[in-house]
Amino acid sequence: QERLVESGGGLVQVGGSLRLSCVASERTFNTYTMGWFRQAPGKEREFVAAISVSGGETNYADSVKGRFTISRDNAKNTLYLQMNTLKPEDTAVYLCTAGHGSVFAGWQSYHAWGQGTQVTISA
Image 1: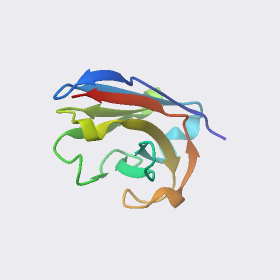
Image 2: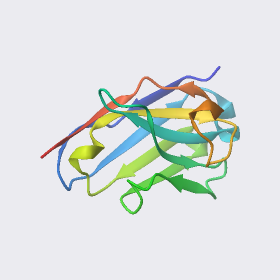
Image 3: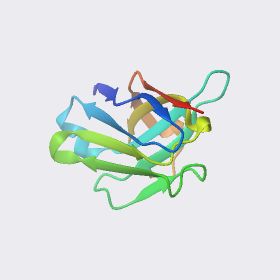
C-alpha cells in the first residue's frame, strides 16, 4: 500500500505560480498512472490532470489547459504539478492520487490518495 504526501501549496497572488510535489512511498510508483484532483469548500472533487506511467500521455481539465503542467520523475517517486497564471477559482485543496487506469479515467480508477495541500489565490 503506497503512501502519498503532497507539498508546495501556499498563498499566492493572482497571476502567480506554484509547483506542487507528491512523493510516493513505494517502489511500484513507476507502475501507476498518477493524477491531481482538487476540492474547494462546498464543491465536488474535481479532476485537474493525469499522467501515464511513462509520462508519454497527459490529460488536463479544460479549466487548467495552457496554465498547468503535470510531470513525473520515476527515479524520485515524485509527481509534480506546475501551476502558472493562477486565478482565484484555482483556490482549493489539491490531492495527489495513484491508480491503474488511463489518463482519461475518473476518480473511481484511483486507489491511493494523499491528504492534500492547500492552494489559495489572493485576488
